[in-house]
Image (cartoon, rainbow, N blue to C red; front, side, top):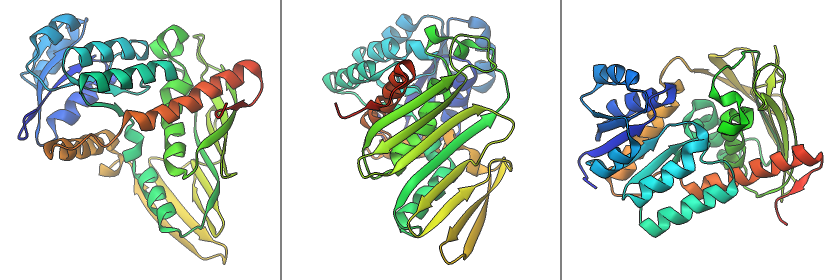
Length: 332
């Protein structure tokens, strides 16, 4: 791998693929070498942005090469097979979330990367969103003491009509947004998930996958978390984190400009504004900048597949809980 310019190939030129292309083009040290999509009508848009070579065949892209990293932005059910093929062809891989369909697939991807001696990483870009980053800093400072309950939610009544409303595509609210919300919770907690109870709903979308969910996580240290994605006109909060000394609260109704409130047990308060219309909202761009910094110093990517494996274990347990109507242990 070059230490002055890292060559990328982006596979899948839908909405997220174009976002990856823009992030790559705007990040110093990265070069867009190739793109791939079975729909050649998407190529002119790419050619307006870059001189990257365009492929309609994934197999031909892998064979001809001349790049260092594959970015896989195809529909979710294709992630594992395309990742395995890319690793086995000799490339490092960044795969979009969700990393795969289930724990078994994620474990297979991790093992293949090790066998091939290649890096594997995942675009869990909400780790770079400003509300998460600020909350993480506050918790690490110890200002609100030990957190014992974390609530995070996303609400809205927008109907989806794309491939993500179908289970055959690994679609649904859990695979789409749940992977981000659950990842946030797992990253913020200093304990290991122990038990999960979940309910899924299909309220508005016309496919067969869930469009809403509520997932409760019990951790080994006794703390709990509730993660919700609801078809709702109003939520409880974007975040509410209760600690032994105080609380962090982010209201649900103010986006894209939100106010993060820290209130202590003595009633003192501190607020700050986060405007997601500015650089604070460029989570993918931030991920790419951090990613490039690491790689240019010959270091591993900032997001490990092992950290995403824990998230997927929670998701598998949540799916089983919904099917059985019972809580599911992650320790058995």
